[in-house]
Length: 323
Ligand SMILES: C[S@@+](CC[C@H](N)C(=O)[O-])C[C@H]1O[C@@H](n2cnc3c(N)ncnc32)[C@H](O)[C@@H]1O
Image (cartoon, rainbow, N blue to C red; front, side):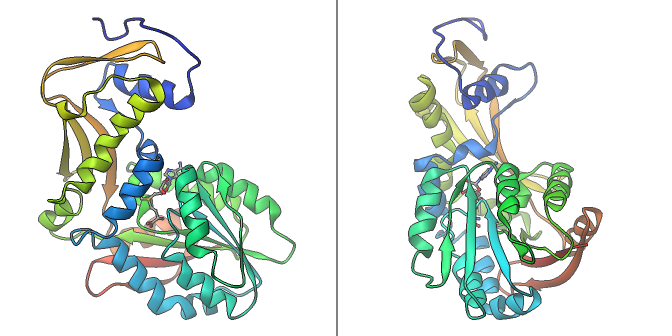
């Protein structure tokens, strides 16, 4: 069957057209990492954060817990808090609680995953003085909406934790942070979590755990295509691959086809052809150096105010002031 063979067309969503573009182009196959997070993907990601090999989330949380009061002091109030890709929001509790000691705060988690937003609302619902309003949007659309709600005289504190910034390709991280800066006003702040470079083996293990949770998280993207787009992927015929790309200093996740196969995606009216061993690139996680973060921040219109680094896992929490 030809790669673009017509099978059955229905209304094609953005997900459908991105899947078609990613699997039927002439170049290497690629799917946007944001589609990893449907209900099952968000649940699997939460499990990943508990894996012994994935020290990143615990490092992020240790830093937030330890420095929350200092962060609250460095962000003068009154303040409105928004978070880009909050996930379950578990770590955010420390920041909200510290800010709440000063005054009540409104918290707007921005998420494309409805399941993650639901988790976040139940996880943080008991932080007494924080009013939580979930925003089911893409990062920048959500942030523009939240910024428009800000009362006069109130500063924005934007959280971008968990090193999600590393999921942007090289150069795209700077473009994204510049766009975030464009939505902010001078005096607003961005708290940016970034995973740092460490020995390759340790970085690889974080994305290729022996329990196979990360593999399930990655393969679930094909499962999602089956569920939502009437795809016919046999998940057993693909395998999870994590590799280090030295040139971009990132861990890449791919899905490798174990044999030659043609897979219909009926709702989108195409079939994708895979050669044996061919891969689909599903996520990159760039690892930063401390200096690189500061340079990136300055180039995007922020002034680095403070940086805290975890002692057990190389991870940096960065407080950046919009100037
Ligand atoms: C790597 S997880 C991090 C979650 C959490 N911040 C943490 O540190 O554990 C990325 C989160 O961002 C969300 N996300 C990914 N792409 C997004 C986009 N374009 N717009 C809004 N949310 C997005 C995902 O649903 C997911 O919950």
